[in-house]
Length: 218
Image (cartoon, rainbow, N blue to C red; front, side, top):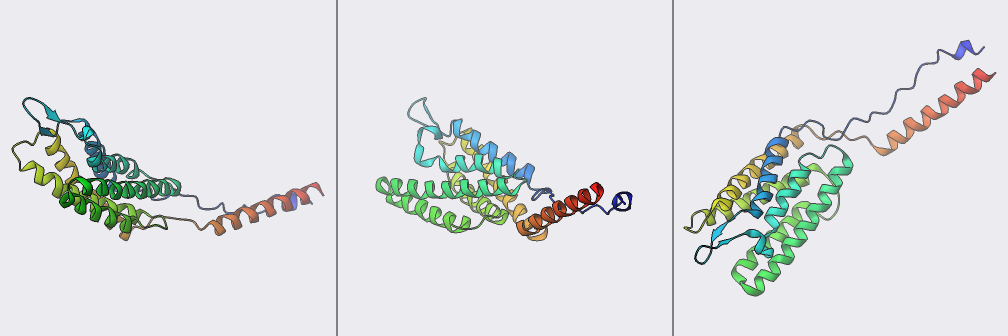
């Protein structure tokens, strides 16, 4: 009798393909992000005499470089958990930009009000609820566009050094990578398995397995 049920059909396992496996934007976005972060340690402007100004010495102006590091990591998010972590980081950075804008506003209102506005736009883009690649892609495009404009202005000055030019190049790359990312999320949405479906498959598989073992014992 046991042999009669030995050939019971196997239960189809739940689909657990990785979240967003294939994304062509990753090399461009990731490289641009890490390059932008490295520029934080490079001389950006000529100072008094022979001294140079490093972005690391100006904390209120660090968010663009921190965004570069964040996107270098977010570009390679392949699981839903890593996407969630990336969105949380973007929300923290958007809050940081807003706070930095307030600090700058107290010293230089004309610049601070612009940074405050950018911070609010970033908060709206990443949202307060939900987690998706499209939020990350939209944030990448906004950061890329803002940084391209910001570093582009500095690149036209006589005091600009290699750090500014590399920051401008990486900002353009981030803008292009974010645009490609946005198009990819529209054309090829990330594969996501509803939790209820996975739980159902696991419960069903466990039930069938127990039933087969019980029959074999008979």
